[in-house]
Length: 240
Ligand code: NDP
Image (cartoon, rainbow, N blue to C red):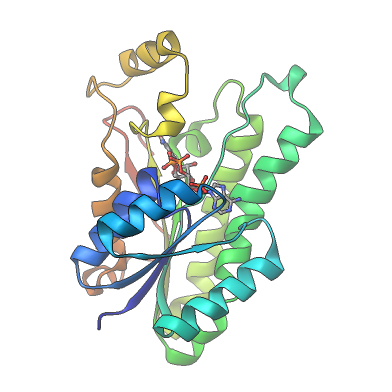
């Protein structure tokens, strides 16, 4: 059995591609989801990957879920904090609820995912922490004050964890996808999507598998000296 990898939001979209790629690379994968049981069941039937349901925004549920994964599969050595949501609105129309929901899921959810796993990684002197941030955390975005705040916050998390974990054999890195053709992006009105594609020098949306391959590299032994870094995969839309 390979190393155990946990992928939050691993049953759909980018997370699904990450789960499948890590499984193909020999990891024992656990994929989590929030509530879409049908998608999770289809995913498990198609891939044989075990799924777990909890809300990443809730610390106690995350801690209990992670304990269950470790009891079932063994210590988690690779964690991919991928679960995320959008609740877009121009700032003057953004409600406190829209702000808090996104902060709780995309930022506090990353803390809740990594924090229960971190002590075990420190003890075992090995760990790979990978957070899925976003191009919009790097550059900001109209109607995404909440989302951009969380995604730049995620970059602060990995840069700080990298410094804390380096001596303990743990790396922490981020992947910043540009626009990827998942349900999250396909939910955007077609006219807006066309204008987004018009701004991508590559002239197309990215594929979830293109993000999965970045994650697989950061999870591998080959990336041991890459720590606190960000891989931007965005079709030349933006450079940092
Ligand atoms: P999807 O909406 O396709 O999938 C989201 C996944 O996260 C689902 O498995 C969902 O579970 C899970 N999830 C959502 N909220 C929670 C929660 N509170 N607790 C646990 N699981 C949750 O998203 P994408 O694949 O498009 O996005 C994945 C990540 O990539 C996100 O962090 C997103 O911000 C980031 N990203 C996406 C881009 C894109 O273009 N798509 C671009 C840049 C970054 P369920 O199925 O139960 O709903």
